Image (tube, rainbow, N blue to C red; front, side, top):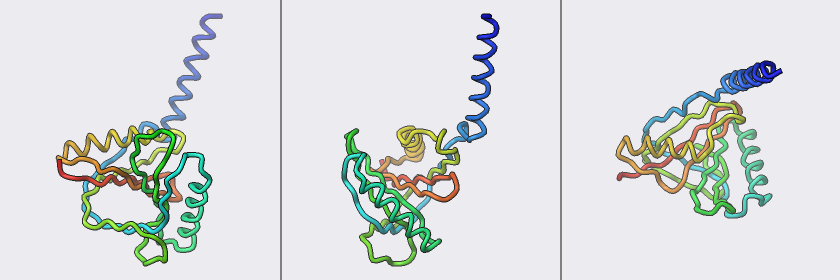
Length: 166
């Protein structure tokens, strides 16, 4: 009886590890350092996490990516100390000029991270920020007060952290 429980537990653990592996849970976050420009069109929202306007703006931005395949769905996430509220600029990165409020960043040194894991096994955003902080320090940089997340139809997410000199 005891052996059956141990064997069953081991089998379940092995299957869980296999699923985690197949979903990309062991894939590292790959970082590079690049100077780049970006213009993001959208809307700044400061609210509680449960506020429906966050989802509404995300869906509106997603529609802009479907209307023009060149646009990329983007969320700028400002680092707040509060656990109850969020400050995000949600919109699209576009080479075209759009009739929306914009956030323009030029000649910024970015720490660019690529996350290839399935959403179920992705590293927590705070873990990604910690890894980016370590990468920035190794390159004599500090992270700015926000990150830029690029969402695509594939499972991959690109996260850019603006860097500043130490």
